[in-house]
Length: 385
Ligand SMILES: [Ca+2]
Ligand SMILES: [Ca+2]
Ligand SMILES: [Ca+2]
Image 1 (cartoon, helix red, strand yellow):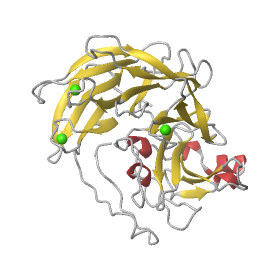
Image 2 (tube, rainbow, N blue to C red; image 1 turned 135 degrees about the vertical axis):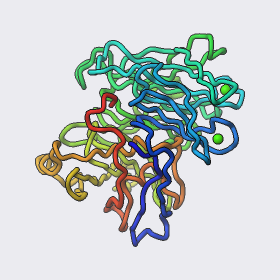
Image 3 (cartoon, rainbow, N blue to C red; image 1 turned 30 degrees about the vertical axis):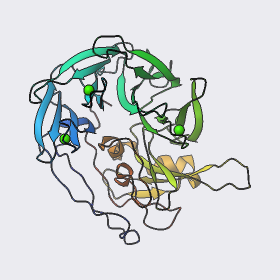
Image 4 (cartoon, rainbow, N blue to C red; image 1 turned 180 degrees about the vertical axis):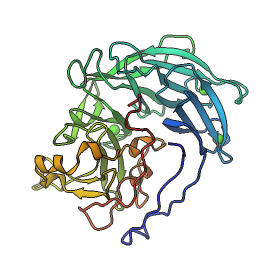
């Protein structure tokens, strides 16, 4: 993405009064390839700033709100940065940054992959100090999560592959909390495994799914879309399955959650891994009292050379779905993952900005249509996936 921008002009007549109007604001017209972004108040002035991991060249930078002055946090080292989150690791009220780097080329799933704590300087125009705190091959995504509901955020690390795995063949990826020690700058960080049986675990999203005040994790991987919850015994399990993902290629690669006007929750996924379909799912009403609630989903897709096309996934045979989206003409729908956002849901009539970029409702449920697309930041052949 050569432009970092808040996008979208929505034209839905039916929801024009409920949806805000967006306008583009260029932050940096020559930012390189922005592989990861996050929002954090770096200078503590109460205004959220934008933190960006770029390739071409490899840098970690932050843009100061509201002037968008660019500050370089790191460049060249650590090598091949891929993901970043903000977390106040020492509780002094100033955020540190956690960086995933050494993305493996090919990818080599047995080696390469690091996690760094970036210690902030007194002068924010000076470089930050990277401290290696973990290693795991194919380190790929990070989130922060309030797992016990006590307000103390923890870091979740999400490698793409299990060690030695070729795509979905081999061990699952190790999704884990990297727990900070008493002295996060000197002591050893330890792991609490969330799951180790998900393949191509391409993205995760934290939220309090069941309203108990403790956050869960939604995973989008080869096996499908799951809510992962820590039980009272401290062990994690798949508490809810939202869907299988793509009916032909299996699974999903991105996931975000929002609420419709009126409060009904929906889940939006990109399917399959590096997929071409933006899929909106919501829970059906119970057929009879006490029965399990199934999920209905509607797919919105676009081709690179043609206008968007939509289909109802629940009624489309596999052969038709495959023919409708030839891979050579796909248009990546990865905008869901590239949107900088803090983990949150929208409420009431405020839509979640991360999903609004790719899917907006223009008539009453259950039909969905997209009114605008955010173009992908990365070329199809980008080394970091
Ligand atoms: Ca700020
Ligand atoms: Ca701090
Ligand atoms: Ca919860």
